[in-house]
Length: 200
Image 1: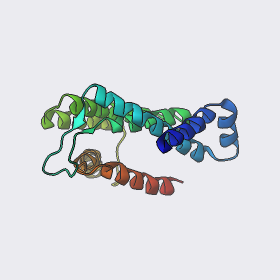
Image 2: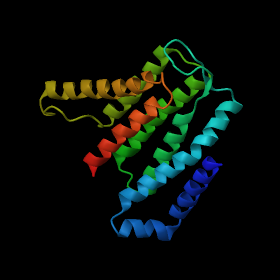
Image 3: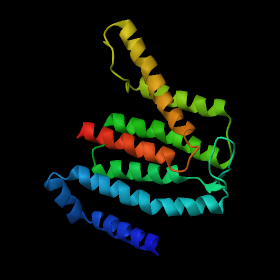
Image 4: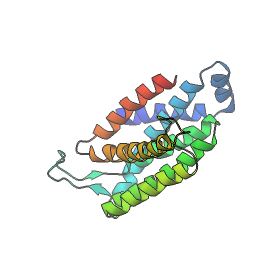
């Protein structure tokens, strides 16, 4: 019963945020960040039960094994709710810079590959190849970390190397900590909070 009330409140907030007047109010009073936060948070809450049902419908489960502590099959696709909410919140923000669009393309390719892996299972080499190609796509289009001087050849090469290591490393680090229910989501929320504070 409590979950239905919670989802009802989330749905009410989300539908209210869709009103043009509400968006205008938040944007005019300097609460754009709060609008985007509430938009993505409530949408991900609403999408999670839907993704759970889809996982159950198509039998997409995380099967217990030695390195995992849950004792029964757990529905997957929770990341799908986050991906949809994240992408929708970027669109709602209406600040679609070139680098953001390119990152969405690359991230979308990795996300689709991960969803297929949850459903059918893919070889680790294939998943790594998709990740490498996604990062190379970003590098080719100029989305590169700027840690070293770009005008010096070795600085540019180091920037490319660290871009590869950073994106692929973070992607797989998050993927490897799925041994406990909510661990990846909780850590992602903590990381996002501190990145939001820095960005703000």
